[in-house]
Each structure stands twice: as structure tokens, then as C-alpha cells.
Length: 288
Image 1 (cartoon, rainbow, N blue to C red):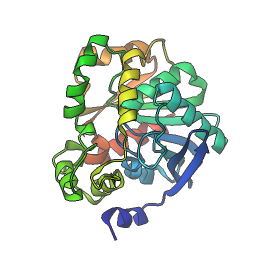
Image 2: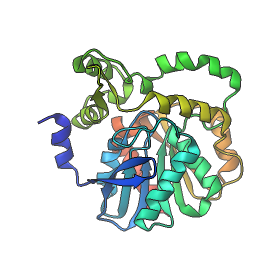
Image 3: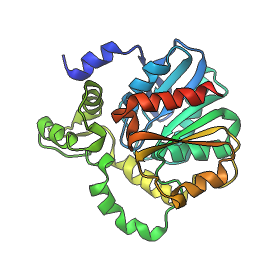
Image 4: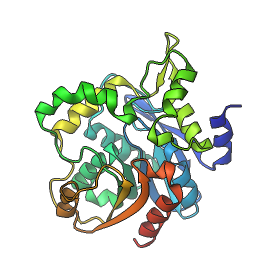
């Protein structure tokens, strides 16, 4: 039995899927609690990164953690990876569950998706937790020329592969900050995010067409454009991406009910410093 199979037997979430017009949307569900809570992973990750938070909050909240389209075990159509497409999937998932609104936790790129969603349909979001957001503003078009470099250097894209062997892929993963410590949970996240390709090589379940369309979309879509009154928690890891006043300014300008909390760790604080992260989320949610 693999590490991930052993780990999955230890958590109380159930695997589910929802059939949408162009794909199957996979998600984990913790249904012991009542209050609706959506957990949205970042680019190139998948829903198992939320196992720790799901287990910590399961008694109070009814939790859904989807693999966003193009990621993990969800479908991977040839196109359709804009913020609008992700939001449509989330609204369909909520409608299927009979939810009119939910608390939303979103990391990195999906924090931008959540900000766009909150701007368009604030009535659907009870509270918003943004974890070290990435790409929140529209990106100048000249930066398109840097995308090939970003594709090679951004740590969350380094697992796309191809890798000649599974062992080679694991060797690369162990060098990345999101897997620092290599706990059973982190190893399970790695294992569940990889697959063997038809040519025998190994690579991420996250697909290139999703990467390319997401990058094209974040260039032209601004995450924050009008004031938002939704209670919002900004989680700022000590070694995260958002460390300067100018990086925080868009959030302080547009989020009218903003709380900022620092936690230890880096961009993937929920994987490397889970206790402090979970405590910050639970405290904020309990106040809503």
C-alpha cells in the first residue's frame, strides 16, 4: 500500500464527483458539520493540500474541497481555464449541494479567482480567507515574454515534468519548499498529484493547457476593482510572496472589512506550519 493510500484511510473526507457539461469535477467532502465552507487550492496543486484544515474544522463546517478544472482528478478539457470558467464550476458545485452561500478559503492564484467572484457575486460569499495571493492585479502585456522563464523557475510548476522515472520526480519534489519536511501528508500530496503518461514518463496531473490559459487570463483580469464589504482575512506567511506595503495596498484599498494575520512559514504555510495556519483560520471563522 502506498503512503497516499495509507494517508487517505486516516482522514474522514469522502471522495465525490460532479458531472458538468464539459468535465467531471472531483472533490473531497467533510459533511459532519453544518456551515458551508469551500477550500480552493492554488495553481498546479490539488485538493488534498486541505486535508489538515478539513480535519481540523470538520466538526463545525460542511466542507467541500474541489480539484479545480485541469488539476488533480478533475477533468482536463482542451480549453476553458479562465476565472469565469472556475467560478462557473464552483457555482454549479454549490447549486448541486443546495448552498446559496459559503465561506471561501483560497490560496495563491485561486485567491484571485475568489476576489473576482466576490466582486461579481458578493451575496454568495459569507467570508473570504485569502492565503498569500498571487497575480492579484492585471499583468502588463510586455511580461508575456517572461512566461517561458517563469514556467521553468516557479516552484509550483516544476513538477509538470516530464520525468523519466517516478524516482526522478520524487527527487525533484523533495527539493521544493512546499514539500520541505516530507511528512506523510506531503508525500501523499505529491503521490496524488502525479501520474504516468502514455509514453511512460511521469508528470503532474496539472496540464499544460490549463497553465497556458491561466497565465493568459491573469494578464487581463484584475482581481480587485471595486470595494468589497465581505469580511476578509488575509493570511500573510512570514516568508510568503506579499511582504511589502505596495503589495498589500490593493487589499487594503478594496477590502473594506479586512483582517491581516501573519503566520510562520512560506507560500505553502498550510503544509509546512499547519497548526498556526489552522488556528488563524478557525479563529477568524468563529468570529463571523
